[in-house]
Amino acid sequence: MDNSAIYVRERGSLRRVGDIVLAQPKPVSSCRRTNPFVLRKEHFIFTYNAEGSLRYTTKSLFDIALLFVADNIHHVDSLVGFPEQIGDKLFAAAEENRVFLNADVSPKALQLFGDAYGEMVLGSLCLRNRFPLLHERMGEIKTFHSLKSLDLFGCRLGDEHEIFHHLTSSSLASNLIHLFIGGNGLSDVGLQRLTAPIRMLRKGLDCLQLLDVSYNPISVRALRYLTCLPKLENLDTSGTSLKLGAGLKTTMWDLLGLIHSEKPLDTFDHSRCKTEGWAEQVVNQWETNSSQMPKQKKIDESRTSALRFFGRQKFVREVLNAAPLVCESEKEAERERLHFFRPAANSHLPEKHNPPARSHEGTPSWDNIKKRQRQSGKPDSSHQSPPTKRLSSSALSAEDMDLLNSY
Image (tube, rainbow, N blue to C red; front, side):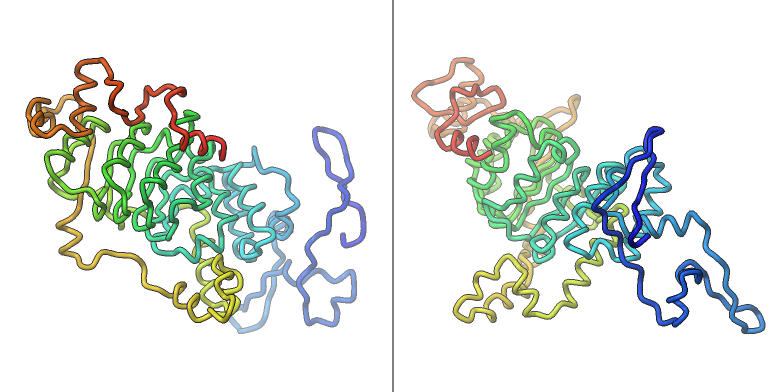
């Protein structure tokens, strides 16, 4: 098999596969390995009998073929149509052989399994406060297109991280339901960029039901960018510039149809977010392998390698080992939690969540103007209204058009 041609039968016809270099067999210490008639050692199972004598049995042809395909998974064109049981065994064999630790093979292999088996490969991914893992394995993480829950809390994304393009991609956005992006230094501009595809192109994050933007420097003005999420039911704005009061409750109800929860919602509990799927152990392998790498090598391969210029290795090492962004105390976290939810259709809303417009006539604000416009049905041209779900493309600002051109 090392030098001979390979033929594949597809749809009743035989074709030759060219330019394929198969994985080299593992070296063995036996001198008999030079004899071509001696079978490979890994094709046998070695055990001991009751008397302590060594005995061996041959592996089944299925196990031998499975091991061969796992070693050469990067040459497989597609697994679509193969039973889930076969895919599970093949993924486990590739994981055991540490195929997914190879940066050259891992993205293609994960893409191969993801296209065939979807969320069974990975339906939920938790990277909370694991920003080095996110930056080092960005190529592999982008292959997970069937995620329903993604936790990126404390990953230091900022406003222009490349993961935003993946979050709003058509393949992932049609499945993503829960998104945690708190503690990332995300400002109003970052939320604008994140929601730009659905606001301007009507695609991306249209199935999102839960959003965590806590501990980010966002203001009330940023809430207008969330009006394009039609299925948003739960929102966490704890630790932001938003302050709980009658004005915030009114704005939240008028823009998003959400009301404040007196008690913290269980849906934002971190213990509920876990990495689940076939690739759960693969993610753990990535983190374990990264922690065992020499520090200098970790710095060279990280996204912050440019900061090493003029002897800044110590600074980079401190950044990578810095403590994750968390709140100062548990009591503060309990006191400042701002959780909002969409009430049931048949529930009775308190008056404080839907006050009359004349109660704020003495101090007109942007929120009161927006509410009066909705009640009267006649928009006021003297005030610039925030973009809503019914906003036409002609009303887009120049900043939005720049974002549209970037996509």
